Image 1 (cartoon, protein in one colour):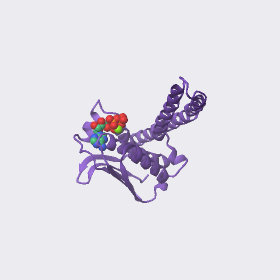
Image 2 (cartoon, protein in one colour; image 1 turned 30 degrees about the vertical axis):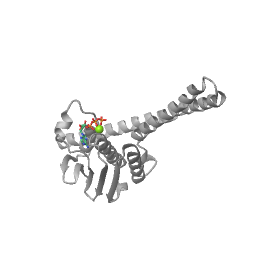
Image 3 (cartoon, rainbow, N blue to C red; image 1 turned 30 degrees about the horizontal axis):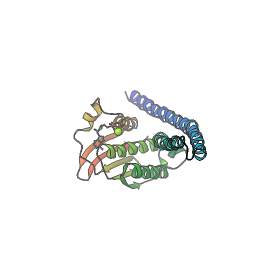
Image 4 (cartoon, helix red, strand yellow; image 1 turned 90 degrees about the vertical axis):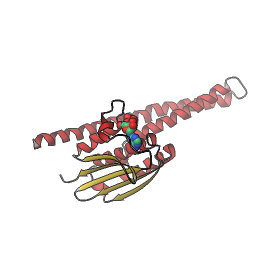
Length: 222
Ligand SMILES: Nc1ncnc2c1ncn2[C@@H]1O[C@H](COP(=O)(O)OP(=O)(O)OP(=O)(O)O)[C@@H](O)[C@H]1O
Ligand SMILES: [Mg+2]
């Protein structure tokens, strides 16, 4: 029984690693192939702009430049979501700061962060899982709760990781289990739950006096 449970969680963690690897590959292709082509189109359209000033083709060239700028914005938003960069290229904190700056600029959600303990002693896959949970909780807070402020608390002790993301958005109308079962719901909350369960942790999503709180605890003893 114990062994089956262990191999199930090992399998769940492996699945998450495969998923992250796939995302990283897609991010690279997007960045290298699509990004380069968009740049090439933009440069060509700018050249057309310069050569066609005062002529009928000028507004067409101008709109190609504008469209490529929009495509760049969309691509960067996708990269931000896809790339598990902060573990490979940066440390957890700078990756998180980048995410919070992005959330503030694009979602108008101001975040405060409070970290207690040493994140670097966590397995990199677990660091990435914590990052993904924060990312999804903030996106949901802005998108569904129309929150304006959020507080992220992360505490790492010898035996446990505790993470909570509290926001001032609209209160939840359903319990976590109802939201998870709702067929019209997306993949965000179930992705969070999968990650928490892969580390044999516990997830809560409730209305509290401080606001809507998504919190999880993950045991750190191996
Ligand atoms: N912070 C929140 N405030 C209010 N409601 C929420 C919040 N987070 C989630 N919900 C509710 O839970 C549902 C499920 O969330 P979930 O993240 O799984 O899916 P989604 O955000 O709709 O789609 P996806 O995450 O796949 O883009 C949401 O549709 C919303 O009704
Ligand atoms: Mg979501």
